[in-house]
Amino acid sequence: MSFVAEFGALPQETLLKFAGSAIATTVRGAAAKSRLTLADFAVLISPAASELLEPLCRRSQALTQQRFGKVIRLFAPLYLSNECVNNCKYCGFSRDNPILRVTLSVDEVLREARALKEQGFRNILLVAGEHPRFVSKDYLADCVRALHDEFPAISLEVGPMETEDYLPIVLAGAEGLVVYQETYDRAIYSDLHTAGPKRDFNWRLETPERAYTAGFRRIGIGALFGLADWRFEALCVAAHADYLLRNCWKAQLTISLPRLRPSAGEFEPLARITDRDLVQLVCAFRLMFPDVGLVLSTREPAKLRDGLVPLGITLMSAGSHTEPGGYTGAGKEHLHRTERGRIVELGASEWATSNGGARHATGQFDIADERSPQEVADRIRHLGYEPVWKDWDAALTA
Ligand code: SF4
Image (cartoon, rainbow, N blue to C red; front, top):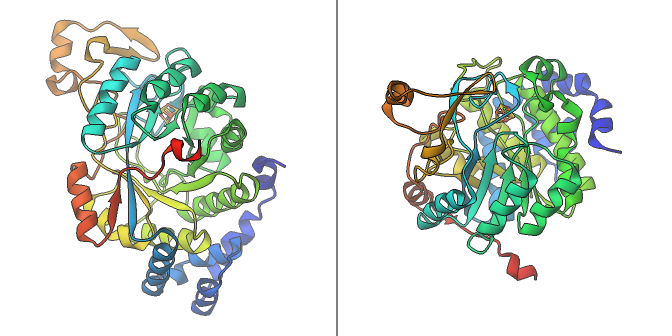
């Protein structure tokens, strides 16, 4: 049975009621268990649990150190393309946004990757909008092949594909696939995704399963917090993770906790999630899934990221750029502007005024932690943790 069927049978209302009616005793009971159910998770994200955040943080910290040691893995996103056939109201790359776009050539991707290697990264996430013409399976496989010798850990965050289309990418050396459902609320999902293949909620929901079948050994899931009630989203992510741990058990699972950031299109969040809620969420996921990696990106400000390091996070991005060519300026000569999906030539004066006078592709969203990777690594060390740039080598399993 796929997760689509299991998701359809999820007692969402009942679980949300658990969250709404929990009291301190039930929170303490759930936190003390060694194996938690979804009902326990609901209790841990309740308002009552928010009042017990300190003991929850201590338990989360202890569990994380026990399972992962005092280690934070670092990675960087490498944007390949900001072309996209979808309209997602919250995303700067939406097809209808009149922005500067480019798809990097494989050589340009290599140049960007080597700039990241210079900074210490060996773990990279290749990111692209969904555009089968520019970001085809062959293009992605070529990119992975070009990088594989120098980067032992390559993951992708790209438009969902058929299982057989993932195969050449896995064969080329990619080990991870990340796909966020964005929101698990079908009505909100339908309202926010107004054009393109991403409108198909179920197709996206089944993507981690197809990725697993194709042989990816790391699977990343998550919701984009700020689109629907955070407790609802968290419950659905937990249910999804629970399903994947039972059915795709050979893969390592990660859960990301991205919150909406400003972007082209100027979408305003539909639901609020505070810093304190985010801390509670990290603790709840850690207690529910002691062995699952928890990912925090540069969407969050430095101070909050530093505060979350000891509480359950295991994987962090650093020094991120969300525009293709962001690390070296690669691809500038192929920039073009699109309006409603059609290329519009720019005159010299428009080039001069676009992007504040600088010619570079438009980013997906604004980042909040602007520290360099070295500054982030120094801070992690200062907090008593070890920053790890590489923790996996495919040669070890050959
Ligand atoms: S969220 Fe992804 S699919 Fe949607 S517009 Fe942005 S890049 Fe395209």
